[in-house]
Length: 111
Image (cartoon, rainbow, N blue to C red; front, side, top):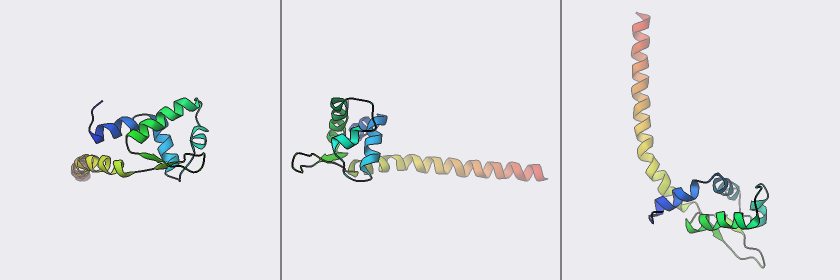
């Protein structure tokens, strides 16, 4: 795997379980037990997913007595958003061209 932050973030986001964990953490901090409840997998498997998310900087783990609550850190997602913005401009321009083409076709049909 590449060492650049964007590649690490995309690799972490590539797994649907990790994306579901991030979606849950967007609602607020949670313990590992709370995060593992909806998934039919072992605690160690969930811990591996959390380590990937933590390495990517997408979550942080705190300490609260014996608990280690996890929290979302969406900072790396900003870089993903900035990268995707270039493609958003491409698709917006494509849709504008398509709209113009469809309008010309409509005008020809109306004639």
